[in-house]
Length: 516
Image (cartoon, rainbow, N blue to C red):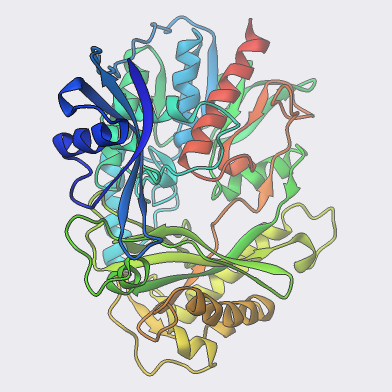
């Protein structure tokens, strides 16, 4: 017999099988010896009461043999299959490639950046010397922006596809099985590169192709149908299906589409700052304790406030993380956050942003790149305020709210360095004012949040793509170009690793329909 129940345990007990069996047995009013196995389905921390507990959804096997699930996947060989060009090797592109292989199609991935190992050198140059390689950075390269930006796998996109199948694919390529059960699954920046490399090896071993340092400069279109792509080298690669999965920072791709009169649309996005606290402050607020014990992970938060009919919200919260420089050009400042798998850094950071709507930005409705240009302008202002070498403008939290330039800045995790600056000189007034109202309100919701020990670092501007590449809801093809499949975050159809992976899978399935 198998029964599914919820059990509750204290921190430190969540991985002790004998204790969990005793708790389950008491809940079912049976002897613990009757339980042959216990499988955890979901696990989350509940800190709402005075005592922090783990809540688990479990399957209890009583006098029943439990067979552990295996996660190896066998893919067919597709070297001679019909080619599908995939532009971009982020999660959308990689999972599109895996799905192509499952369907007997040959994926040909074209990635402007470098592979994981070579990419590390360019990231070192960014952090230590403030030098940005526009083709290889935190946004461009094997695995996309997610590879060196945390690996958070939490998503609300459960209706778009099989989230569990994506998670199992990660496990098959080296992720721990914890991501299948944790309420907020997370791989960690230190582990994700090896997993990405393993996925790439699967694609190559099955007969797919991956070309690094390969930049697409034009789409080849004849009579409304895609025929292939042209590269910066001048070479052409031909295929009757192209999945465009370039990520939200590939501005040259948006400009290319605009130049070729392929329809794109300006799209709302969010803009603000990255806020960092000592992790201890967040732990004290969320766990209601003086010091977090070793049996609890660093805590996270999720905050939102309506200010003057506009949402101000936290985004991409990184417990035990660092703030990273994510510029893709030499004269801009863009910040993001990530955490290692252990989340053991002394700081917690989160993007805190305000929605930017089309009517907020000057330009007529035919100006499909106006949101992108606005984003660029803010990032260049931030660069100028920092003074170069990716030094970021920053301000203590209460100083920001009270319009006071900080006399000094707290120790923080942003490696290239920070410079005390009045952030109101960079952010548009209506964003600045809403942030100033929201932060004290966040402090009323979460004790200790509103403090001058927190630092605001500018700017958080790449929360999503400022451009949407339209597609048909049924066929997923561009309305003007048959065989072109806009995909993932860059096209405006995803918002993280999991949703991008699902969108890649869906686009590959759609490509099959026009190739059979």
